[in-house]
Picture (spheres, helix red, strand yellow):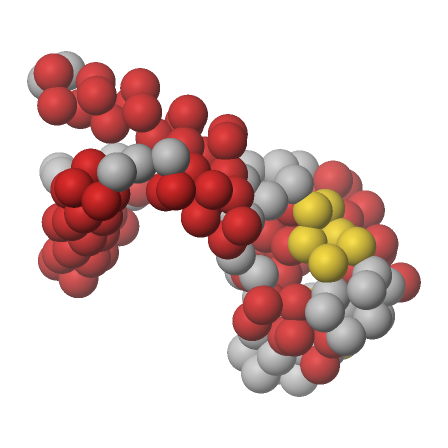
Length: 158
């Protein structure tokens, strides 16, 4: 592994740990969801249905674990289960308006914590840090656009 990759792998978790959201609060209802529940909502859509088994596989959990998570989200009014029109044996998941609202307001990092972290830097260090993040984000976007990420996830060439 390169020294540069080691630096990213050492630094990114520290930033994430300091600033990530542990819970997501619905701005309208004030209901609180765990970060895991919000992550499930992130993978769903209000129009295109998602199969529970596919979602479980994608998120690396068993179907029973995902079913329990979806049960909670359904009770909370964030997800609907519906029979597939193409195959009535299959159940698809869709976001409700409340689930879509949470998905739209959800952020991985807590904005106030990010601002507090940035406030600890002088102006020059802050500009350098932000420019570096922009460059890394651009490289990540290029990886996604080129299909390299999908090839890597399928076990192919990078």
